[in-house]
Length: 366
Image (tube, rainbow, N blue to C red; front, side, top):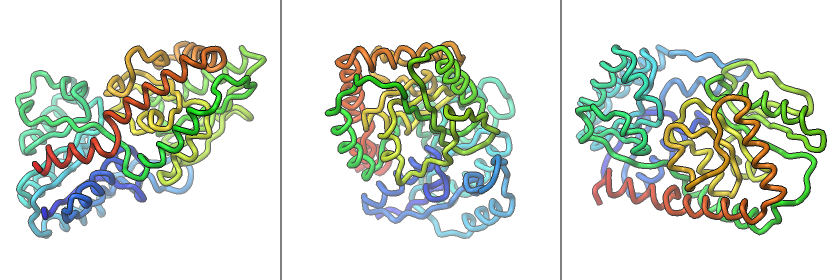
């Protein structure tokens, strides 16, 4: 039995993809008979602010408590820490990492984001901090070679590991049931109203404003059909809702995510940057068609020649919406083939078994 500590966000305290994967990591390590201690990232409190627009805070007191707790904790065999991206976030990560480096035999730096290289290439101070984090880590975990290859000139490439995201054990089981039901139903039934889902932080860089504009344009241009867009996510900005068209539904709780997602006709995201979104892996697992930008490691999630990708501009999003709805209504076999191939891709690469085996072999060396 190894003693392991994980520093980061976790479900119940946060709703992010990072929290999902950290919680999955915890469960796999426990299933492999290890003792796991959690150090909860104070910024998790950002996701539990109750009213209005969420304001990002530093939580100095909480951070000092974590610092003290970590410094006086017993030594461990392995530690994991998630990298932050802002100047303060990188300094905070470095401080905790240096303590964990002293307190543990082996330290893994987990890179969940797909745009870390932007800070690395363009901002000298952040590149300096990231190099220090890479230097003091025993290994750096990336979600995809598409992300790690952005660091072509990095001296630390020999430390890089690739461990793709996946669904947890419970969601893997539920998704099989939901997929069979969706795949058995007729897809190209005539519809006048399409229920469409957006899930993600409410931020301009996530493309939410352009998605709303594209949906509004579709509804203006197409008199015979209508899209109702339900938006779930953490409100970091004010959302322009449109009566009977665009409605904010709050935060999509992890415990009922798949049950809610399966009720929609398709999903749209249009992010400027991503890592390897759990949301799209969930879509593959339950057979939900989706429109997405092709950034970060999203290419790894897509089947060959996936037809419903867009850029972040309104015109491109609108075109993808029109193409997907046309195929739903007129090309049932094409849509079913895309859904089936996507589900096969999920089973082969992103289910619980794959993640379990990656952790067992690449981290625990079993």
